[in-house]
Structures are given as C-alpha cells and as structure tokens.
Amino acid sequence: MENSPKLPIIALIVAALASVAAVVSYASRTRGEVFVLNEVEIGLVAAAFTIAIYGVQGLISVLLEGRRLRPGLVAPRLTDPLSVGIVLFSLLLFGVALALGYGLIDDWGAEWIGLLAGIGSLDLAVLLIFYKEAFVGDEACFDEREDGIPW
Image (cartoon, rainbow, N blue to C red; front, side, top):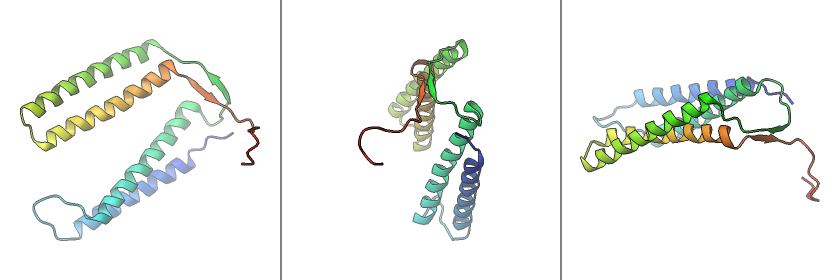
C-alpha cells in the first residue's frame, strides 16, 4: 500500500485558494470599524482550515510512516524525548490554565481570553498525540472482513 503526498499537497493548494478567496471577498466590500465576516467568508475560512488540517496530517503521515506502509502492530514507544515533551507540554497546559483562570477573574479582554483558550486547546491536542504515541501504539490490518456483511 502506497502513502502518496499528492492528495495532501492538492488539499493544501485548495486551502490556500479558499483562504485567498476569503481575503479577496473581505477586502472587496465596505466595512465598519468592527471586524465581521459574512456567511460566505466564514464558510471559506472553515473549509480552508479543515482542508489544510487534512493536508498537513497527510504530509506528516508520509514523513513519519514513509511512502510504503507495512501492516501490523507497532508497540507503544515511550522514549526519553517523548517523556520530556509530555512533561513540558503538561506544564505549559497547567500554566495556560492558571493564566486563563486569573484572566477570567481579573476581567481581561475577550481577545486575551480567546488567545489563552486557543493555546490551551492546541497544547492539549499535542499532549494527547504524545500520550497516544507513548502508551497506545498503532495497529494496521488490511485483511478482508469475514463477518457476513457484503461491504
């Protein structure tokens, strides 16, 4: 089974085109002082973000797993650098949580609260990826199903 980078690269190009379309749409209309996107621009940004995630995930898969996929079971890989990453990202998440809690109590602006929440969400996502690599492992099975269902 081949792991090709063609489709992820095409996805990144489509995401870039959708982003450019959203920017052109926003720049071409009159707007007030408040930054507001219309429905089409929100849809273009959401589509671009979703397709870009797919493209980046596909390229990371090609980079980490190689072009030729080998089915089977891969044991969990808890290494020293992965352990250090788990500790650092856990401390970062704890620090972001403290800052977010303080910001909510101290009535910080919505931009700072949103920024901290976004950083915390991304940090948690990376931390979950690290935990999965360290403790769960992978399994790829390309056998035909034999459960009586025709598909």
